[in-house]
Image (cartoon, rainbow, N blue to C red; front, side):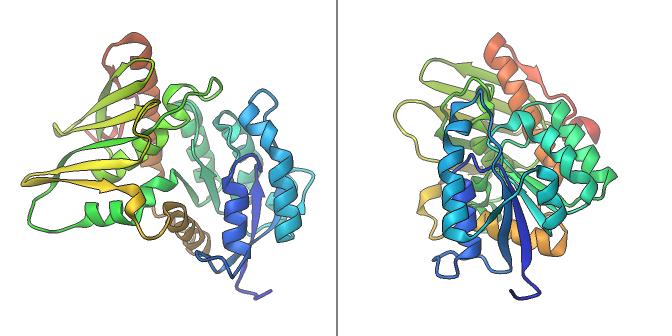
Amino acid sequence: MDSKTLNIGMIGLDTSHAPLFAEMLNDPAHPHHVPGARVTVAFPGGSPDFPLSIDRVAGFTAKIEGDFGVRMAGSIGEVAEEADAILLLTVDGRIHAEQFAAVAPYGKPVFIDKPFAVSSRDARAIADLAREHRVPLMSCSSVRWAENLDAAVRANDGQGRIIGADCCGPMELQPTQPGFFWYGIHMADMLYRCMGPGCTEVRVTANEDHDLAVGVWADGRIGTIRGNRKGNRRFGALLHREQGTGYVDIYAAQKPYFASMLEEVVRMFQTKTPPLDIEETIEVIAFLEAANESRATGKSVPLRGSFAKRNG
């Protein structure tokens, strides 16, 4: 192996991202191969009370071990000790804080797959622990990195600044990952890519088929996320600028969004510089937490610890 190639440890083989990322990193023939890193060791994990976790571990483990030559470790600590950097892919956001606490003392770069956490308290605890052990840390939805969304946000076409955004996508519900945390996080990350941090309150309207969360930013801008369990299941975003509105169909991007994200993750592993401020990630979790509370009460809910309040 090239001495410049990083050894990647993978924690949590209960998500489709695990075999996908292993293939993109370990197979040079993959059309979206990401060079510079290789998955060498993994810990399968799995949550017994979450069928979409435990029921997928055996199959994904067999594929990753058999097809890509990844060695299975007996513990999270063994992975952290052997690897140069860590992909914490565990699909159950409830245990990310516990698993991160086991790897943080090793001081190695970590990517935590969505959801970063399922409470603001856990999100803050993870970030504080990363700061204590000087761990380069990144967490996000892959949809945030869609090339055409990035291009639309960056566009300088004379239409002025972004004054609002409406993001949509599928939003199935899972009892162990409360409300918006399971799939709403994709739209929330898209919204924050468009709007940046600074949301102060959220109000949700929901029924059996749809959820609509409306966020108000400190500067008066409004952004929404619409989660669908019926009808349109495509990720997309309307970007409102001072002089016009444009639609971004996430699936129209030439490169898959997960490939764009994995490139950013490997670059972070190499440079030890995250491309995304962890404080913004924490605010995304606070947004989803507030949305869940509003979903239950029907009332507008302020974001606890939002960027705007910390810096106001």
